[in-house]
View (cartoon, rainbow, N blue to C red):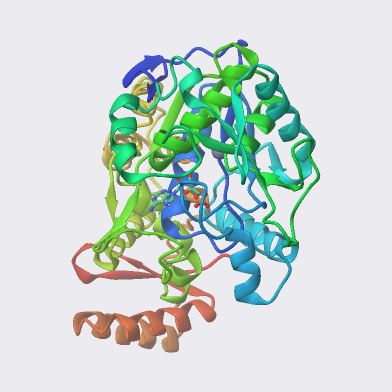
Length: 472
Ligand code: AMP
Ligand code: ZN
């Protein structure tokens, strides 16, 4: 079977994964800024990290997974300028920043639970580790990497010879461009804030004393400080969305490596974006889609999980409701096939050799840089083959679902002998009719009524369907 290989952004190539300590993986994933709900694009990033974690577990690693909760104000722009996101949320809702942080942290945890995303081993809140962040800035100051301007303490990026290696930044080119564009106190375009001062004469809701004056930490310092605290100076895997490559992760590397003088992270993994017709989905632009928006439209969170499974994590996904409908159909077909197998009374002997062959094929797919899309095709081969008995098929389905996380073990057998009440049959017919008339809103309403009465519909190819009784 293939060894686990992962695409490392640092080398821009697939590498065989070897953890520092045998059998244990130390992994840090950048978490949410809790000033608003997560949108379905953000959730794509956490889904990709979930697949990574499940694949590591499938490979028998113990995974120490740390995720930060950014509950302190990052500034809206990447240039350390603009409004503070947390204060902005507080003004919008008339709550304190602390209340905002608590509310949206819980909302986030609820969203990921609905998507069957396994929670991290440790959640760490930035505001709980302000001292550790100050200590790291002190270390950088002692080593001569900082300078102070009227609004904060900055990292002098040109003092670090390999600054920008992750993103392969063209520092000279950026500096050239900057002379025309910028006239602030920063020495170089890529320099960034480690500590920001509270504006004079203004009391912020979140501010702390420090050797440099009252203020708050810069955007990147929390991840360096907390990853070192929980995972050590060098750890195995760090992940996030692709937008983090040029700034946030580049600056985390700079801070950690400048202070400790050792390699920060061995494998950097980045998930591509979910985009809409109009471009990138973003919170600051407003009007974004949440998982609850999908639920309100009659989709289940796992329909969305299935939708995400259909594209490799390093490719962009275009979101549209037509694409989500196609995914929902695919997911329903899968469940319907499993339900059929559960009712299959055929008792052919076990075919261990074939079970091992399919398990091996599946392993090779997921170990090839998390190729879950091909792994799904292996599941379909298993379900369709004539050479496995139902028990073997169901064993493999449950095994593979450790990666997919689609609750495939909860699919009920088709209860052939159960008589479906006539009102349910009637609602199902009306739903089919509404779908034929392309009135999907009405079709969803009928489906919800069916669900409320304890039944559900499995769509089968060609517009046909099966009524099933939900578990009590
Ligand atoms: P934020 O809460 O804005 O810090 O973002 C949380 C995570 O979502 C980060 O890892 C981002 O890289 C990621 N992210 C932001 N927008 C998208 C998107 N449209 N698609 C996928 N991931 C995203
Ligand atoms: Zn981070």
